[in-house]
Image (cartoon, rainbow, N blue to C red):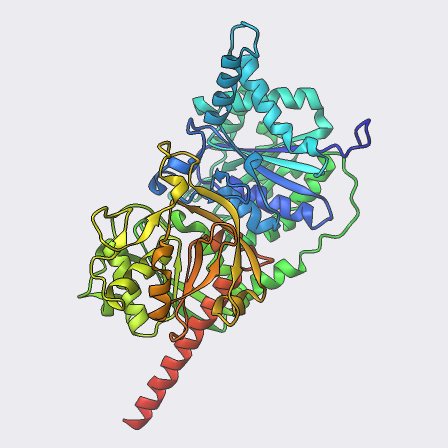
Amino acid sequence: MAANGQKTAKYIFVTGGVTSSLGKGIVASSLAKLLQSRGLSVTIQKFDPYLNVDPGTLNPYEHGECYVTDDGAETDLDLGHYERFLNVRTSQANNVTTGRIYYDVIMRERRGDFLGRTVQVIPHITDELKSKMRLLGETGDYDIVITEIGGCVGDIESLPFLEAVRQLKFELGENDTLVIHLTLIPYLSSAGELKTKPTQHSVRMLQESGIQPDIIVCRTEHPLPQEIRRKIALFCNVQPASVIEAMDASTIYDVPLLMQKERLDQRALYMLDIYDDKDVDMQSWIDFVDRLKNPKSVVKIGLVGKYVELHDAYKSIIESFIHAGAVNECKVQIEWIHSEHLTVENAAEKIGELDGVLVAPGFGERGIDGKIEAVRYARENNIPFFGICLGMQMAVIEYARNVLGWADAHSSEMSQETAHAVINMMEEQKKITDKGGTMRLGSYGCELKKGTLARQIYGQNHISERHRHRYEFNSVYKEDFEKAGMVASGINPDSKLVEIIELPTHPYFIGVQYHPELKSTVEMPHPLFVHFVKAALENARQKYDMGQLLEAQN
């Protein structure tokens, strides 16, 4: 405890070496889950060494999904893993980039905060990094703060981050800081051997930055024999108990259980001088993994989007389907459908055999016609439909064109000439020219209409969901749509923005302006995904029963 009686946090830093994409975020989330299951209060933060202020303006092909927090921060997709594993909300403070650090320091220099002194990487940038690294720990809300350092040891852009970690380790002391280094142990099939040399070199580079790792987590395709563990310990200057095996897993949700088996949490607590005799309660997690791995049925759901080549662009949607599938004891088989390749001519071939269709979020004109066609086919053929953000907007345009008869209906994002801009830019967005951090971002409330599908799904009158958009349903046309059968079942109480649309005459047809996938966790699967998968499962059963009946008649 601090002198003022406030809780004093301890800090764990997770670095990576040899190659990127080893799974630092999953290892950090898994350790955090194990510590949380012991009754400790844990949060995770991501420090990214790129110069963008945040991922908000990055193309999904560059960085995957842009994750949005309740407070409107556009962040790295790893924050989604943190929330899904811990069921704890993150914020702007949980994701920091080099761009943000330099921006803040330069703004302070412009204000004269440095009193005319020369501003340098050391100490000014590293001091700012340390301040951000300690920010969450100084709130008194957490026992442990885990910081994932993006990139690889040896990257030039990571050097200030590592220097900040080195200084913090010196300032806070050995028992209050812990460095975990995630590395790769490759297997050479021609030699039939696991090779430790890349790990040795990676640790040596970390040591050259003045940091001795306390624990080494080894990604590997094969089990690590004791002699390999001892060799790594000897040449990397750690105890054998601090060499942790991280075998490739069939699902990321296995990793906490694998890390528990390797006693990663126990080792971390020992090295942080935290006495804890509680048993880890992972039973609910074990039950979830069991349902995930032993489904009783399969549903095929088409995900229609324009970034389908990079599945990470839809990471939260994928994970939400996993959560919802486990609840329904079924495996959700995602069929990836590129909206640019979907046409009137091939819609039946690509969508006809699916049990459900989700039209994904996105920006820009590319692939729009395919998304509209996906909506039309699902609507006319009674296939369960779910539209998210742009997907909801495409459902509105499709209905305007094919039911209301407005052939030119469109979004003003794609067409300024349309006489029926059923989707239009929000008023407060029209004077904004900067792109970064200027959309309608974060959590906003929504009132649900009685007697609607949305109200039934949520089971409550008022909800709050996360947003990321500039365009909205044009309320000028709301009465026209409702007369034609499309119901606006969710309305923001302040702006009167239409948040949810649905078709009561359809077995399951719902579109939302917000991003429900950003709030689905292992402990709390999002109800919209749960009910959508349930509807797809019912559709699959009906098709199977009909097929059986026709077969019997023939």
